[in-house]
Amino acid sequence: MSSLLSFSRIKAKKKAEIIILELHETQKRLALEKQYRDSELKALKAQMNPHFIFNALNSIQEYIILNKKNLAGDYLGKFADLMRKYLQHSDSGTLTIHDKIESLEM
Image (tube, rainbow, N blue to C red; front, side, top):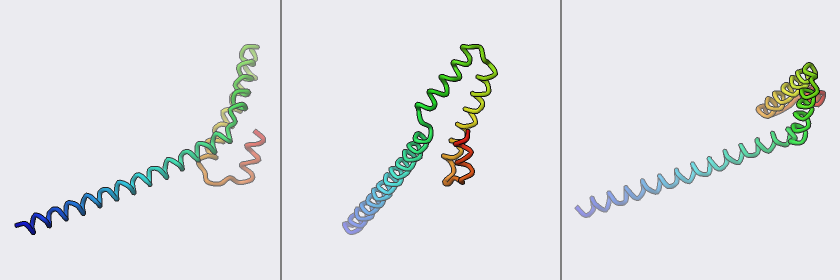
């Protein structure tokens, strides 16, 4: 009877150790995933300079205030295209020279 109880304890202890190891591995994987997402976000922020975005939106606002709706619409369209390009680039692992030149020209 005591050997059966001892065996059950050992089995339960082994099971608990396995669960703890799996938990640690999951925590490591989640930490790596978070680090990867943080790196992606930093790269995206580096591409989309906050000062540039602020200046672009300020220019659009000025066109609207001056009642230059066509210029505001054109500028806004170009700005939206550029933001879309940056977001697409952040999803892809690599950029062609053509894509980079196209973005710079925008």
